[in-house]
Image: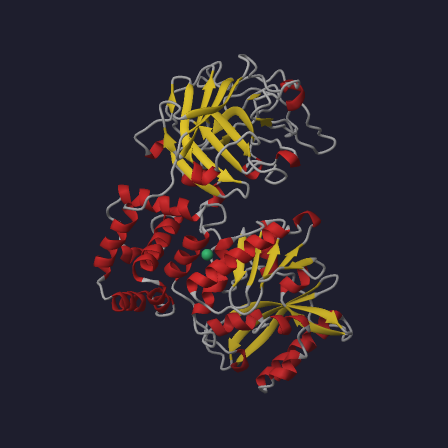
Length: 616
Ligand SMILES: [Zn+2]
C-alpha cells in the first residue's frame, strides 16, 4: 500500500554513520561558554579513559546512564564493535553547536601515527548537571521530560499523554517477553527501555540516525518505535544475549533478522504472513539458493527475503531444536565461516539443508484468504443498501475514466456467514468493473473496506495510514479491517499489522464474480462474529495494488473538487472530505450528513458510525 514499507523494516543498525553537517563554528571560544565547558569535559573524559580510570571517566558523564547501561557511552561502543579502542586513537573536534540546553561536538577519530584517514565521526552530546557539563547520549537529552510506566520487564517511555500504555498493553509486552525468553532459553536480567515515539523522524533523532519506523540498541536493551509494541525489535534485544556478552560480536545477519522476523514479524507484517510469502516465493521460484540467502538475506527482495530467512530459522528450530540454533547464532560472522559452521553443526551439506528446508516450507499449513463462489454455512448478518446512493456527501461524481462504469462504487448488499472454520463475506454492488489492472499508479476500479469492531471500547479509529480520509469514533474502534479491491484482499488488525494478503496477480483464481465479491477468512484470525459485533462497509475508487506486495490491495482514490481521470469530483480541495462514495447507514441516520460531517476549521475528519448486527 505504501512504498516505504518495502525496504528492510526495522533492520538492525549497530553502527553509526552520520553525514549530518553542522554549521562550522569558530573554535576560539569564551572559556565560560557551554561549548567551551563541553570541550573541556570531553578532554578530561578521554584523558581519564586513557589513564585507565573508568571511575574517573564516569564523573564526566551524566549520573543516570551509567546506572542503567553496562556500556553507557554508545559511540565508544560503536568503535569497540569495529575493534577500535579510542584510548589508542587521536581525536579532533571539527565543529560545535550550542542548543538551548545542550551542546553538540562533532568529533573525528584518527590513528595516532597519521595512518589512514578518519576512522569514525561522532556527534557527542553534553548537558549541564549539578553545575557542570557532562556527556550524554541523544536519547537521554530528547526524552528527559517524558513520563514513564514500569511493568515487570519494561520501562515504557512516552511523550504524549495519549500514548500512555494501558495495563493490557503492558501485560501483552510482558507476555511476549516471557515467551521469547522461554523459547530462546536466555538469561535476561534487566528491564527493556521502550520509547513510544510520535514519528519516524523522532525515532531517528533519539539515536542520532536516519528516520525509521523502529530501532533498537541491542547491547543496552533500548527500543524506540512509532508503534506501541514492536515484537521484532524485542526479539533482537533478547536474542542478543545468546552471544557471549564480554566479546563485541554480532550475529550473522540472515539468522539475526530471520529469528526476529520469525518470532516478531515486521513492523506491519505478522510472522505468519511472512511465512506465507516465503511459501509463495518457493512455489513459483525453484532457483532460490540457501547459499545466496546466507550471503545476502535481501537478494530475493525485501519482503520475500524477510519471509525466506524467517522460514529457514523456523525450519532449523522446529526440526533440530533451539540448542543447535543458538550454537549457530553465536558462531561465524563472515559468510565463509557461517557456511562452514552450518554444515558442521547440522552434519549436512548446505545443498541438503536447502532441499529439506524447501520441503518443510512447502508443506506448512498457513492461514489464508479463501476465494469462494458463494456463501457457506449459516448466514448471520445480512443487510441491503439503497441503490443509487453512491454520491458520497450528496454530490460526489465518478472520475472521468473509462473504467469508472456507473454503479461500481454503489454497494447494494452485505452478508456474512459462518461454517466450522471460516467466516464468509459477500459484497454486492450495482455493477463491477472486470478489466485487468494494468498499473499501480492509476485509477483501477472499486475499493471497499470492511471494518470490524469485535471488542468494546478498544481498537483503532483510522484505517492504515489514514486511508480513505475519515475516522471512527473511539467507541467504534475496529479490531480488524478487510480491504477489498480489484487487486485482491488484505486483512489487518488494529495495530495495522497485516495478517493475510490475497493478490489476484499471483493467483489462478479471481475473487470477483458478476457484481459480487465473495471470500472467507479463517475464524482463527478474526474470531467468531456474534450479536455484539459492529461493522461498517465503505466503498470508493481504487488506486495502486497491482503486483507490489507492499502496496497491499491499493488504497482509496482521492475525491477532490474536480473530476479528472484519476480523481473523483464533487468534494473539496481542502483535503478534509472523505474519499468515500457509499457506506452502510445506521437506522435513523443519513449518509449525506455523516459524510459531510468533517470540519476544515476545526481540523476534523468525518466520523463514521458502525452498525450493530441487529441494528438494521
Ligand atoms: Zn531486524
